[in-house]
Image (cartoon, rainbow, N blue to C red):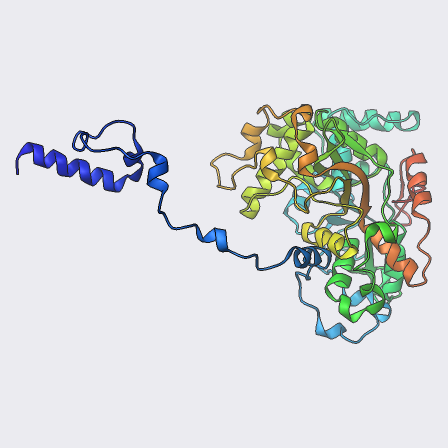
Length: 474
């Protein structure tokens, strides 16, 4: 085979391996004398795309019906079929996976246990052999301690001396016990119920703003486990068909049911993260909506996200923007869960209760934002440049803490979610369940007003082993 023939065959082989070469405007050395077809001519006669004749498996009406009445992700427990939920005991639902620390345990040690635990709360006891809980330690306590350690938490005159002594102890490298950390701010009181109490008592208590209940053995202080708002809402959702008086509420819209509040607490995405944490602490809320300059929701920051700020390398995040912190949150979730995360979940006033509860249960969130101009049940995550879930050699905080982020004025928030108009929480939903069942959970508007008026911290009584607070929780 001569050299010219070899080159000709080699060029033909390369052309067959790379079809794009056929569309090149550079004349082929072999076929330069032939007519070169235009792109339009080459597309003539090609078979039509199968997508052109593809029909939707579901009609628009069926899709909307699926959104309004989503199937439950879990399986109904046959043990509760045919039973009245009001006669089910809290002991049958309680989560018995609890972790204890002592009052004298250092905050750093307690924080490490909290991060390692599958539960969002630790129980605090007086001594290592005690079976009773004196108080709790959770991510709200961790947020307060972080604000104190960074000089963001300012004491009132009554506690100034206490703060100064605690700061001196920290400067000398002495461990700060949980006992002292619990006195840094307002606290949710410890609420207990006997394991034989029925769910009506739990629904009524949760509907009044309490986030968790410590379940104890009847007529004792011995802890059996913890029941949270989310666990109860999830149980009632997954077993809804067994409880007709609750199940009949799910097809109704949150606007018609009149649940949620328009008393909103949000932060602009360009504000420093430390300001958002302080606002969350001062208002006694568990999460904040992050909005752009048009008041459109672009993200969410919660107390639990403080776990990303426990390393010294994450200190620059406090000075960076809230929008930047959202990218860190999404990146971390992506690497931990193996999939990209959406920046925020939301509903509209016309969303059904079923749609709202399904989202809260799926995202394990305490609150979900209510927006107007709602076009899609899922925000367009690509607008915020979703971060790849591919594992990386370095933790995200090491390089993301100094990465510039998008300004709130440049975010297409209206396309992502819509303008913030309200919020629906687990408290709102359980308050509704309680009222529809003839219970008296209290007026949530008054509860929220009391929370905002309260500015005094909790007082811990070692003698009684209970945390006493004048601040009524949300």
